[in-house]
Amino acid sequence: MKRLRLLGGWLRGRPVYASWQLVRRCNSLCQFCEHRAEGGEAELATDDCLRVVEGLSSLGSLVLSLSGCEPLLHPGLRQVVAAASPQHEVRLTTHGWLVNPAVATGLWDAGLRSAAVVLYDGEPARHDERAGLPGAHARAVAAVEALREGGRGAVRLKLALDPGAGVDGLERALQLAERLGVELAVDVPYPMPAAGAPLAPALLEARRRGRPLASSPSVVEGLDRALAGGVPGCPAGRAFFNIDHRGRVSRCVEFQGPADVAGSLVEEPAAAVVDRLKAQSANHGCTACWHGFRGEVQGLYTARGALQALPGLWR
Image 1 (cartoon, rainbow, N blue to C red):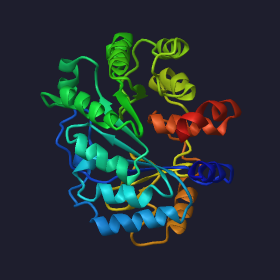
Image 2: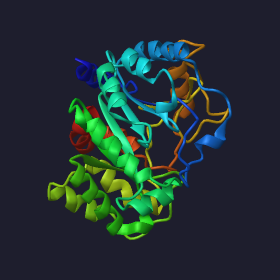
Image 3: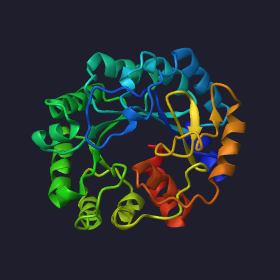
Image 4: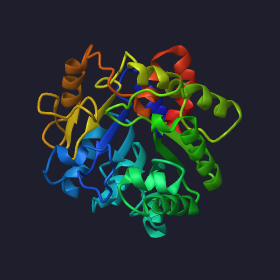
């Protein structure tokens, strides 16, 4: 039923995806991450988070992606998942350090639909260097294993792409995904790194060979173009939007300054905030990112892309 409501919202031109950074705290030191430095305000208390969920539910069903910095640091995460899951397809992104079997079971019991564990490289030393934390690779692998143990939701590795690692880096990540029995999604860190050798052909070949690649063709096909200068047509603020750790709404995770905020889901009706955001976001023309969720959602707005992207977006 949720998936039918999601499809209905897409057909009516409503937002279908929301990314929510529950916290600005993290116990990893990832080299490219700037979010911890963006504000020292405390995150919302759990009761206020539940008000945000109530507001989102008034908009209809969404794919709701819970992230952070590290969302498992929020004491009310399980309550947020439980409140959101009856109406929304709830996803979680984590670096895995805090995942154990009990945590995983609690989240699946609360209604979590899927979980992604961030991967920087399939090789432990390379991963740990980019994460800035010795042992991070081992903890990520253990997190995947704990999340898979119950077999109750989709689990994947989410590769924070390093173009400098080239095709070899993709191969290491694919091999790890195969060993762990999960899919691999490819994401491009922000700011986007300099383009290296073309990567899309190797990923499309991996898909053709039936290897465990979760990223849709629309994401893969736009990858090299994004790294070489950017893909136009971003639907941020219209088809998807961002919620920060204080419940404030902006068009994208990368644009959260005072001028970007359309309103607060704690203080205002969600429909009014989203309508204001759509008006602010018309024709913004940004080409600064190629996050996987952007590629998935943007693909819905072409006939070919919709056929390719819908199965991946709703699963």
